[in-house]
Length: 373
Image 1: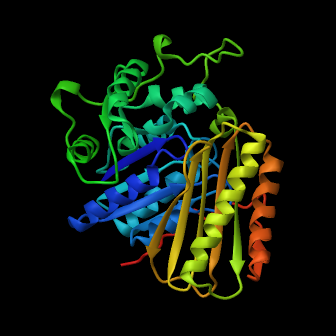
Image 2 (image 1 turned 30 degrees about the vertical axis):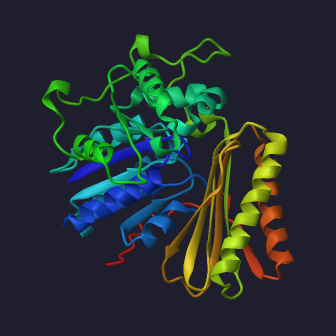
């Protein structure tokens, strides 16, 4: 069994990468399981991934590396015993320190298990803004990686790509730097799959767990002290986050779901920018219609809202879920923005709903495996 941890800051493309990896290996006859860690008590990525037919378990209520070590061990043990996957893909929340997660998995010493090199995705289309808004945290993720993928290169001017490669390599000279886009299948994708999941090239040697050396310490510019990876990563990120769910009373048409999703996202973006004009993070929403699921994403103040329609059968009670994680904003204000925007939009369109507010101290089950095969 191979275990791969795919980390990266919020909105770096982890879910899309995990989905594509999972589908590719599943189609090749491999048994693939996915573990998704979400911030907050309401998970969203897990629902999206399961809609693609992958088997998954979802951990919520915090960050794997700082509060869910016991559940992670239990989950991996039960997955291995009951499902016996060939590959486990782990997607940490974007405000986790992935190296700690990888270290914890290594220390479990699971039988017949190989932990693959640690992958960190970097959204190349907003690298400059990320280093401005969340520099210390982003640096911690970058220097811990063994494979660094500059993602979304299809959104970057070609002339900027070599500059980004050089900058990223200088931040972590020990890592293998790759270019990546999940928008198409090309030589970059094949190189990533081969390095992340195949045998590591001999010239790079065996990937050992690394500890932060003095020359690669991240220094907090405000205090002059090193940023320690043992800190609570959610606090260290400086990101306010909130996730919640609304239950819709009756099914709505597919075109209406798209309009509702777009209107909500536009309003949330505008209101967030009033308080944090140059925010980075990730705001994502999905809403179930009568025939499909609409998923929307936004990763920064200067990025467009993207939309994806997933053909899938929805449950008896359609849901609207949102996960928001934004830099430089007060948590309570973010909560108010999200809830007032959603309830106002649904009410204005005469869509009846029930707000399923998460419990502040809810704890996830050790494992909740969803079988879709």
